Amino acid sequence: MMSMKPQDPKKIPRVALPADARPDTLAVREGLPRTVWGENSEALFLTSSFVQPDAATAAARFANEEEAFTYSRFSNPTVMMMERRLAALEGTSGCIATASGMAAIMLLVMGLLKAGDHVVCSRSVFGSTIKLLQSEFGKFGVQSSFVSQTDLAEWRAAIQPNTRLLFAETPSNPLTEVCDIRALAEIAHACGAWLAVDNCFCSPALQRPAEYGADFIIHSGTKYLDGQGRVIAGAICGSAEMVEQKFVPVMRSCGLSLSPFNAWVVLKGMETLAIRMREQSARALQLATWLESQVQVARVYYPGLVSHPQHALAMAQQAGLGGAVLSFVVRGEGAVAARANAFAVIDHTQVCSITANLGDTKTTITHPASTSHGRLTEVQRQAAGIAQGLIRVAVGLDDVEDLKTDLLRGLVTL
Image 1 (cartoon, rainbow, N blue to C red):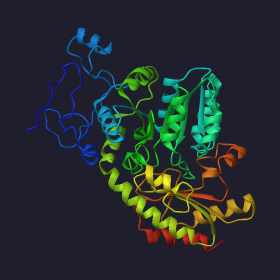
Image 2 (tube, rainbow, N blue to C red):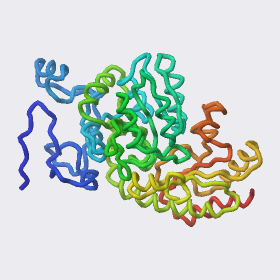
Image 3 (cartoon, rainbow, N blue to C red):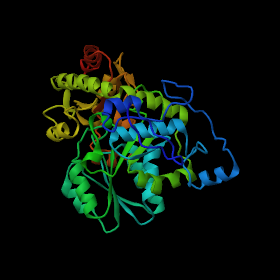
Image 4 (cartoon, rainbow, N blue to C red):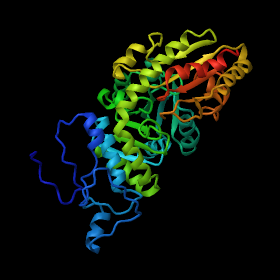
């Protein structure tokens, strides 16, 4: 029988797990203790509010003098189970779930920054992240500079006296550029700033940015955490102290909340996360290797390939795996022809799902320049390296030979 420390009656109880429980165990066990009914699958609490035993207790709980569930905009058992599980997998003491991945980035900036503060961000990040930082927060006086994902000198040169946050996404979407997390953490901390890393492509199954010095880890739970394209979700992982001090107050005021049902779906998705990531990474490597041999393909972007510029760094940071997302450029003279060729390859597919989402067990295919990065100007797209001939494939669990045949249908027409 395992001995446990006495539970604090003013704290929400923890699951009785060994202190040295490994990630695969945490992925299926961490959360909240079972209810009195003894359920083996985590309970789903679909309620907007929670009944309190008396007015005095309600007052204490709403004043944060006692930890308990009060209102699902900022405290719900199912959501907390998902938060605790993700924090355990990322190796952080705290996590706060949000309505989407973009809501997580919004909460990050609202919780940490004010008018006049400055952000240094990779120009290779997801298009909506660029728009949010530059256009939306720019209206409220938060300044931003965009730099090369991989050039540490550019990051250093962009630092200003008012720099408070460095933001990176590794691997990046869709060019799979890999940044040196440890080096960026050193740059950030040397100037008194925080480092936030979007870990959407790798998930904690392959990469744990906190181990390299990142202060905050951003997730779109919509992707690999769910793993089957069912719900929209997001999260910020970091220290429990920062979550409580910086993000919970904003959540209570703004309501960027994750619904309990979506949290439950992501919670269950995390149980198979490591298995899926290993298998999908293996299939992505096979497909990327095959694409490199196709004459109609000008270039393949995939960290698992030796030809990738940051291959060695990726293997060191990503548990020796390249992840499940790859991109490739089809040949074509000029932007118009390249775009037409990319569309032809996509439109000839019969297995791949034509959708801008990723992280699904079903392989997805998209044209980034007109979807995920479609709201950017052409100048911004060119700066981010998003060519009109670029196609992104998020490899699922389809048979790799079927995927090769599927892409070949369009490639042979070029």
